[in-house]
Length: 285
Image 1 (cartoon, rainbow, N blue to C red):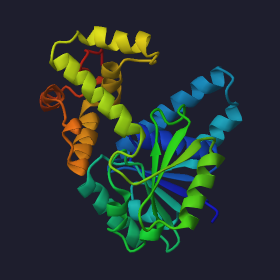
Image 2 (tube, helix red, strand yellow):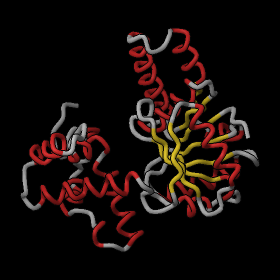
Image 3 (tube, helix red, strand yellow):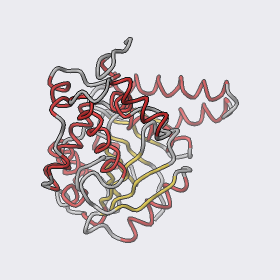
Image 4 (cartoon, rainbow, N blue to C red):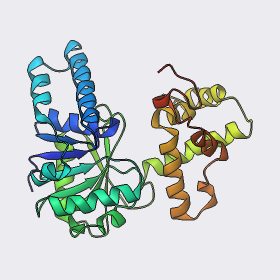
């Protein structure tokens, strides 16, 4: 199946990044969110990124202009879905919210349209079961920041067809990303490993094993990580980290996935990371 027009639900950091890479690859992309200002702000942000890429010689002015031309603001989700061969949902990591979106998309989209979720932890099989086209539902877990990171985890639900998988794998390769097929387990592969490590870093901080700076330094210079796990948690968002840990804890029923009390306390305080100016570390807004 050939993919032409694409719709992205959610104009946040992930949705905006997905829209950008799809538009750069030549696809017309409808970018949707609940408020026009969210869409406009994201397109302005993408334009700034592309301007930097032109300045660094990574793309031409013509390529920049074409990419921006390919991104179409669309406040009406159903309208955009009706004109798309693929819809990628990149909304908040909440099964109830995602389920509602998929039910609406199922009614609005053409019969053959593939519905994909950028969920980082939630079960694709359960999301697919909320539609009348479970064979056309699949997970596309992009990494942050999307324009830079190569990996895309592709997750089949129990009903996902081979045609759907092959189409999404081909599209992923077309946009210059590396597709890896992962089974439909809580948090899939990357986050099952990565977020568990971050949670353990919170436990070492909680138990006074070392300061936040020292814990991050140990992992940067002892394990050759580009940034420490606590710094990375702030970058991801502590609310997102907690949500993924909770999915794993409830999904596996294993105490090794129990969210650290300190992580929960930070989120309860509203200290969710770099995006709000305060997490494990303090940032200038």
